Image 1 (cartoon, rainbow, N blue to C red):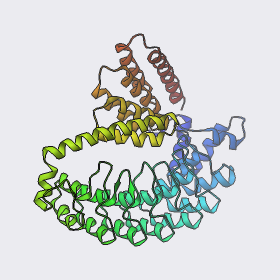
Image 2 (cartoon, one colour):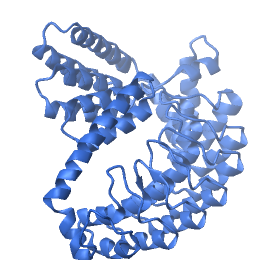
Image 3 (tube, rainbow, N blue to C red):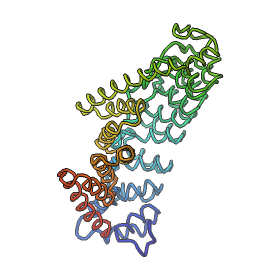
Image 4 (spheres, helix red, strand yellow):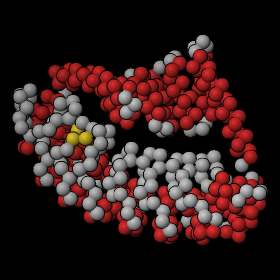
Length: 430
């Protein structure tokens, strides 16, 4: 935050909570009261992201301030900020264990979810906070809590947090959890190059032959050049004959990616493929780079693109935006040059309030089709979600320059301009 001399009363108040200046905080609270009850006045003071003094105190690990707010002011511990996060989320993100202990002892819900269905346990798993994980589970956190982006186990696996992963597995986390649009814990561990996480998951009963996002963990290991993980998976019973969405076995994937060690490891355990006449190391390498094989892959890619785009559109019509994103991503992987699919995925991200991702897709769309007004509309919507209203106005205006009669762009431009004025007034007051 800014220096205290330049702060508005609101920000001075919130800063006192963040820094733990309890005496100043109490004085400022009385000043803000202005005839209302103290609890009402304190609870109503929020920053532009909807965070109250209790969120700031928890984020800064200021347990004394939290104690004052909860026990004397009687603030609700479950109040949520603009992202749906509780003080417990903030204490965990800030890695403030004593504050988290206090909140939980006072009755904070360990299973509280934010707008993306993330719990404090997701954050603890992602960061590898062992003491937090033990604490949260002991207080009743849901070990397999399902967020839009996976379970705590998948978060730990994605960041190679082997100790956190083991704690979760020891507490009966499901090693075979699969979402249509998210890699399995085993596949995520391969992607994070964590041999130890792979080993722990297999020991806990992870199925090496589960496909997620159209490929098995063995196929991913072949693609990523993870030779030791390939051997580990094979030893655990991985089937080298299971193909990915494009009809390729792991040995073909390894050959295509130039992973020669992987080819050598996979060749003896892969059943002979009739379309490859010379079933040897050099024969596979030669075949995979042949004109015939390239043409076959092109046809398969086109087939996958059309199917994935169609399934994405069907999911969007059902308002199943996560699955729509999965299928649009498959289509983009098949053909990254299709601006319409990028535009559609940007729209899905926007519907899920994922402004940054919506913006990334919209800007990629503009690069592909700088003369397409809709691409600028998508960019404007994303900027608006991020509360960058000035940038949103500019994007909508860029679209209007290309299509001056577009009423949707015109309305969006004026709405963004009005939102910018309101936002500026709000920040001045605060």
